Length: 301
Ligand code: TA6
Image 1 (cartoon, protein in one colour):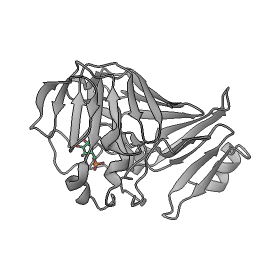
Image 2: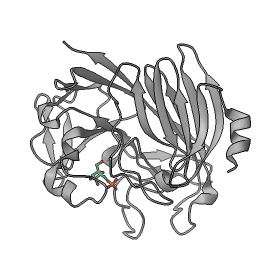
Image 3: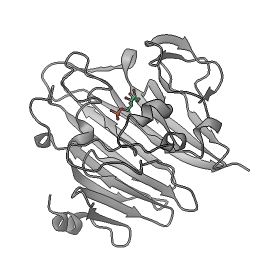
């Protein structure tokens, strides 16, 4: 990928440019009057989004390791075409191959309200054949403005049906997760992954005082992260998704992760827009499916 060619083709002077990170991975940098963002070409992974006059909304580990074929801790990893461990082959990477693959920039457009939309398509040539379980198209559009919107579109270009699971595995920056609550999931059923996957019912808001790893199923609800320390709410509105995953590794699990520093777990929370478990998708030949989510921030006194 020739950055000079890409910049000639796509650069928006003063708003968008493609640069190369220290690890040699190209990054799309966006700076507009309403927000700034950065998107790694590897994984088409947004690694930062900061509306003007706000604290960063998306969290990136200070110990994140950016390098070829290495999943980046933080931002919005694309878990596709499976979520979590592969259902039958333990040799395959957790959360699929999209987040470590290279993606092509296919379009950059300026929209109303100072938004910039960048569209990517996964470059299948960058996926080792031994892990590409089936061949189909996947595209991601990211609209950066005072609202952040992601659209993940899968098209089954095979001659037989495929079943996928997927998640926009978003890491949010919070003041102190012990003071945060997530509303919108009251009454929903969830698989509790820290209790052998037992199915439970959510009562009230989700609070955090220990490792939390929950797959809420059959829910289309808006979720709101209420953060009294940063005095804001993060609104999460989704389309084309029936699952919401909520995760914080807490101290013990985080201590086992090379790319999370001590106490980093207190400042991050994943609320993931997904189609997983009972909500996995089966696409017939030629069929497409789009999952999208929008994030916005409101201040609270
Ligand atoms: O979405 C929650 C989860 O599935 C957790 O179980 C944990 O594995 C997390 O994803 C992070 O996975 P990763 O492969 O990025 O370390």
